[in-house]
Amino acid sequence: MKSKLLLTFLFLFAIVSDQVSKHLISTRFELYESKSLIGNFLYFHYIKNPGAAFGFTLGHPLVMLAITVTMVIVLCYLFLKGDLFSDSMLGKYAMVMVLGGAFGNLIDRIRFREVVDFIDMGIGTHRWPVYNMADIYVTIGMFILIYYFSFKETPDQNTSPVSPE
Image 1 (cartoon, helix red, strand yellow):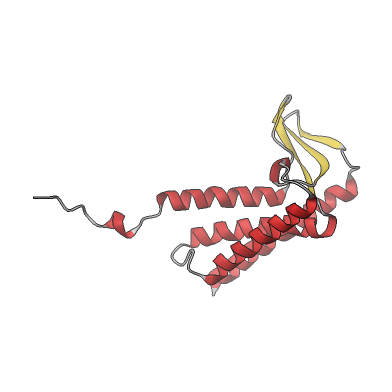
Image 2 (image 1 turned 180 degrees about the horizontal axis):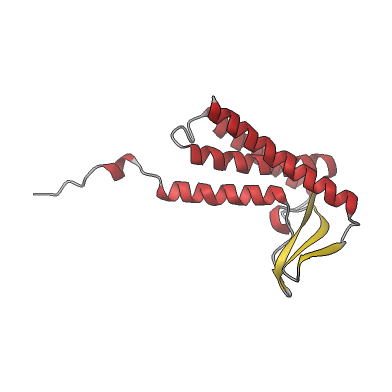
C-alpha cells in the first residue's frame, strides 16, 4: 500500500510541477522572452513547441497529439497490467516518471496543440533544444529504464553454465 501511495505521489508531482512551471513561465514571460539564470549556461526562454520532445518535429500538431495519446495509452496499459515491473520498484518509479512527464505534455497538446518549453541550457552558441519539466521526467525515467533493463538479472544469469564432457 505504501509503495502505491509513493507511486501515485510521484506521478501527480510530475504532472503538477510541470503544469505549474509552464503556467508561471507563460504568465510572467512574453513569448520568446529570455532571462539568464546562470550566466550564459542556463536561461528561462519561453517558447511554444508544436513538435516532439526537445523541439524535434514529427509533423502536424494533430499527428503529435495522436502519437502522444497512443504512447500514453500503451504505457498506461503495460504499467497497469502489472506484468512489466512486478519485481522492481525501481522500474515502477521510472515508468511513473515517464508517464507523469508524458501526461504533462499531453495536457498541453490537448489544450493548446503545442507544448510550453522554457529551459534553455548550453555553452555559448552550443545550446541544447529548449525543454520543460515533463521532458526532464521522461528523460530521467527513460535513463533509469535503460539501466534497469541493461542490468536486470534473468533466470539464465542465475544458473551456472554446464560444461560439456
